[in-house]
Image (cartoon, rainbow, N blue to C red; front, side, top):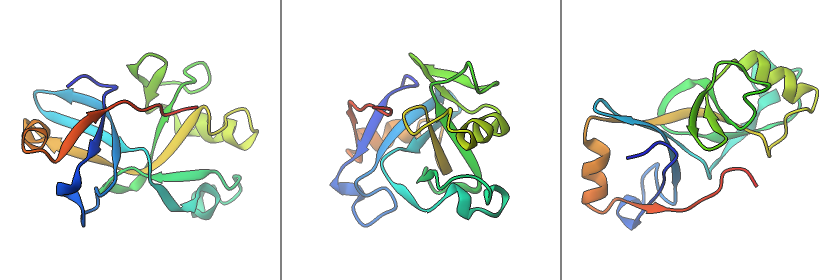
Length: 146
């Protein structure tokens, strides 16, 4: 599966973390896949996290059930955020969180430029392909930043 692909859950995943989820796949190779749930706001905002208490009330998203102790970023501003990896046309994952927070704080970055995620989704080798084959996920078209 190509990075930059969007998938959405089917009713087979109802009553699970992934019910009504749209996921952006950011990495896919022989070792497995990584992605982020892009359509589920997290219950808290950036300034409600102790480390970022002086930041604005910027929205967070519930990216997935893995590594919920860290913030992850998807953005379209490599000119401002150093160190990100290209996922698709004008879409980057990761990068320097300090750069991101600095530009969120001074309002240079908006929700049209960046999303912050708590956690991510991960699959072992061939696991996501098997879930797609069994009908748990289907390909969809989506736009992250509008």
